[in-house]
Length: 191
Image (cartoon, rainbow, N blue to C red; front, side):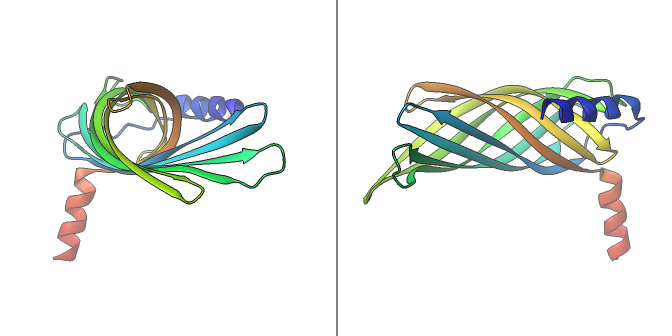
């Protein structure tokens, strides 16, 4: 995975792709995260999927809405069956600030956001549900592989205000950018 990332970044550095960080542009995409944690008698797998969409308020600042879906499964090393752990659903808003050169194919950004999460814990036949609020902060990089498509690499730190815990994760994804001019052309075409 590390070598793939390096190759993509080198290809982007050599390309003349311009970034889509202009007022009025939109972006759609998502990211994911997978983690496996091993213990002596069991291990668990976590999968996060985060679809999102955003709008550029000015040439460097975008407002993004996103949903979060997380699944956790336990597996016993002693031959037991998989046990569903918990499922989380949520959503939130974030502000992204881009500080790279305007015409660069690599666009670094920082962001901060707030989210509301519903967590459903399923252990055997028991069902428990709780609501949590929290906030995210992080930094990332959009590496443009086409003028309107970028790979999304970011480190996210989530602070859960309900359980007073924090955790970090590396997220990988893809974003499609829709220029304001393209939206206007589409409107004119439909008239």
